[in-house]
Image 1 (cartoon, helix red, strand yellow):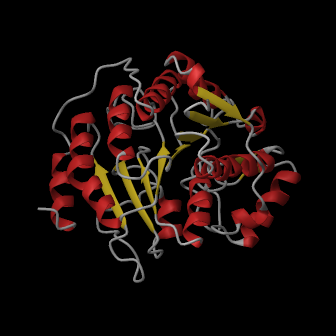
Image 2 (cartoon, rainbow, N blue to C red; image 1 turned 60 degrees about the vertical axis):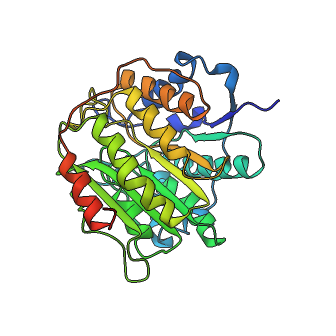
Image 3 (spheres, rainbow, N blue to C red; image 1 turned 180 degrees about the horizontal axis):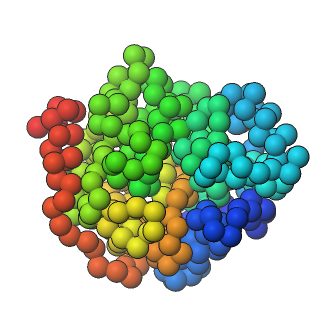
Length: 336
């Protein structure tokens, strides 16, 4: 009998090296995967080596000139792409492998070989815009998978719960009526985008839902925004697929931001979101998360919830900070 979760990960992903001080470092992947055993899920998981995405795969969402530049930059030894974003000699192969993990996740679900697929890649991807790297991200991994499905006429919802707004994913799909992008994020915070009035381009109005929350927002408000805003908007869109851009840096212990979710909050969000699409159509894509303990607990809690298991190493968080964002979104999206 097939394992209910397939995890696409590779030791080769750690060839993307960064300076010792950098938050996005190789140990992140080990910490995330350690959450699987902590949650008691080893027998529920099959691990697979992801394929290398092709240049053509990347060019669905990135400019050919940028992809060629990135490959040359890595071949010549790498270095600083911007003040936050680094590439090493092995980063080109890592980028192909991380994007390939998302494509393989889609294939595994289409083949019916698992219930949930986890593309455990690094570096994260949701800040990478069509023509450049940004915010630790080289290639927009979730966009590569979503674009392949959208090109085939499938409708895709991307729910990005990383604490930072996924400006790259928004830019790529802003005028694509086959892709709904939803982001819950802290605001103001890097990269400075993600305002509530950014709702889609001329060809895709109301296809981009931004939910900017103030620092201190907790899980109670996230549960409300899923139930009162995200769920009805996604149901109205009627997607065939759900991609969760699973950054775990909205956790209360993450050093880069100020939201206050816990691992058990992520479990609640995952359960609610999975119900919005047909069975075997949920792809989880690793994005940020820079406290290793929080990353491990949150990964385990999320994956357990998606197969009906319970791993709740922390209490859920409660509070009302951020409720005005929910109220404003209900009004803007005509949900009252």
